[in-house]
Each structure stands twice: as structure tokens, then as C-alpha cells.
Length: 101
Image (cartoon, rainbow, N blue to C red):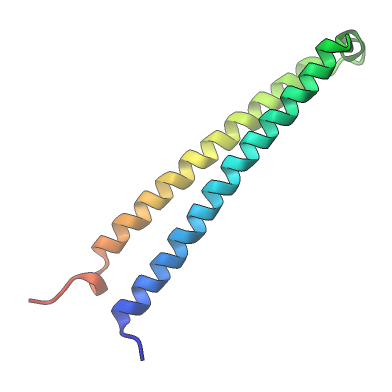
């Protein structure tokens, strides 16, 4: 049978591992999103498709939406890192983890 301290530590570990996974996944998503958009931009400029995009009137909107999502994802990663720091502090402050003397 595990003690309340062991159970508490296990729950915090699960939460921290989940946050670590989210941080890593969001970071990977940013990298892939950026790479895919760089390839798209290469196609547009290398194959002289910019005029078609201007003609269809979505180049400005596309660029704005790319920037919005890109920076939103970066902000999400930073928030997740902050949440992780908060949980780490909670581990230290949790009364279950404070020894009685």
C-alpha cells in the first residue's frame, strides 16, 4: 500500500509529464508549421505564383493568419512552461510533502 506522500508525488509526476508532452508537441507543431509555410513561400516566389495569389486577393490575409497562428503557438508554449513552473512550486508547497517535526 502506498502512502499519501507517494500518491501525491505520483500525481504531480503525471501532471508534469503531461505538461512536458504538451510542450514538446506544441514545439514540434511550431517547427512543422514553419517548415511547411517556408516550403509554400518557396513555391510562391520560385514559381512566380505571387501574382496569382494577389489576383485571388488572399496573400495579405494568408500572411496575417500565418503570423497570428505562429505567434499564438509560441505564446501557448510559453504559457505551458509557466504552468509547469507553477506545478513544480505546488509540489514544494503541498502540505503532504512537508515533513512534520
